Amino acid sequence: MYQQDDRDLREERRKQGKEKAYSFMIRVRVPGGISTPDQWLAIDEISDKYSNGNIKLTTRQAFQLHGIIKKNLKPTMREINKALMNTIAACGDVNRNVMCNPNPFQSEVHQEVQDFTQRLNDHLLPRTGAYHEIWLDDKLVAGNVTVERPVKVDEEPLYGKVYLPRKFKIAVAIPPNNDVDVLAHCLGFIAITENDKLVGFNVTVGGGMGMTHNNKKTFPRLADVMGFCTVEQGVEVGEKVMLVQRDYGDRSNRRHARLKYTVEDNGIDWYRTQVEERLGYKLQPARPYKFTDNSDRYGWTKGLNNSWHYCMFVQNGRVRDSPDYPLRTAIREIAKVHKGDFRLTPNQHLIIGNVNEKDKELIQSLLIKYKISNEVHSGLRLNSMACVALPTCGLAFAESERYLPDLIDKIDLILEKSGLIHEPITVRMTGCPNGCARPYVSEIGFFTFIYLFIYLFSSLF
Image 1 (cartoon, rainbow, N blue to C red):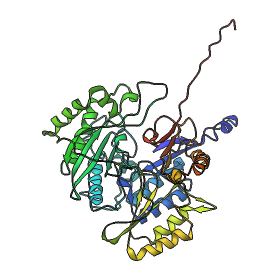
Image 2 (cartoon, helix red, strand yellow):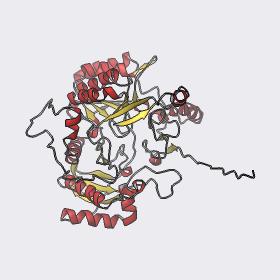
Image 3 (tube, one colour):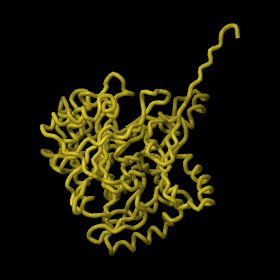
Image 4 (spheres, rainbow, N blue to C red):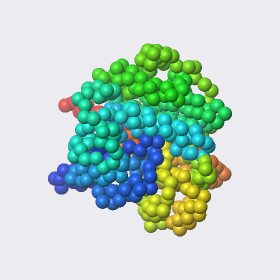
């Protein structure tokens, strides 16, 4: 949860002698991006009741709700909890939402990797009961009170008294697709298969996109491949990688506190040694893998058990209605009849997942009814991504989400003339150097720097 204000209104309210137009953003953690139709409908209802009436799908497979005023914070949290979702570890100096390739079109490997993602996410959650005490009045809405309810603890078993030096991000990729941009994360797991069976993961450490403008000691960095572990070892390896960062990450300078700087300063061999000492065994040598793209697979794809999956374009992850494109209404109506799941993609789009063969025609009819078609978009637009930026993000220096669609309109004119209108060119934009839309690993990246010039006038001037 972050406090924000509407920066479009700042100057007008200042002139009127009013305080800023404050509100809150709440981020709902969705491990691997998978939610049920009922959960989608709950988020949709909450966005009308307490938020600004639309839903933001993030670049890390989470829901964001904007424009929540202070008195509505607790009711919003309680409604999220009733939908069996929460915001725990979606922000803060902890392990964040664990990302996973959401496209289950290949084989049962996708389900195995999703199961691993959930186990890893659950294992690295903070154990404090403060969240339930503050927001939920300790009231359980589902589960076994003796098993599933968090135990109140004075000190976290993994995070200790001071948690991590900075946020910690994990992604799990399934080659040949790298939609999660696994090398852009603190910790990555690259699924390795043999004869269509998942045998383990190559482990990567030291990636990260954030930087501070005009500070050369901060920079984006791609992760290094540290070694290979089996599926059974994966959760333990993830824990030890995080604990090394907990113990050795820079706590004197938050701008130098991410894991990427720990690896950059000490080297990948040193980091591997630290992890292996905690494991009590050595990691195996990394195994061959190959990535061919980081795009989503739009339209219908067939998966296991004759199930179907439809990937839908959502421009910059903003689910809302417009007069000529009733996207939010369409998804709401689909959720009312859908028996499978919804999958948020790392590229801010949406998969209507696990559609039965007999239900495919119904879902398709709703897509046609509301004119929700991927075919009307250029290859550049289908592979575009932007952070929220203005007017709500306090870190933004410039536009991003609101401007990128107009920029693509102009670039598309050039691509049309060049015969490249359907080429899947990746373009990403952020309103500050922190890189939430991962522009540093795109084919075309826009990110904003601000240079401050200070003019000193002497009394003689």
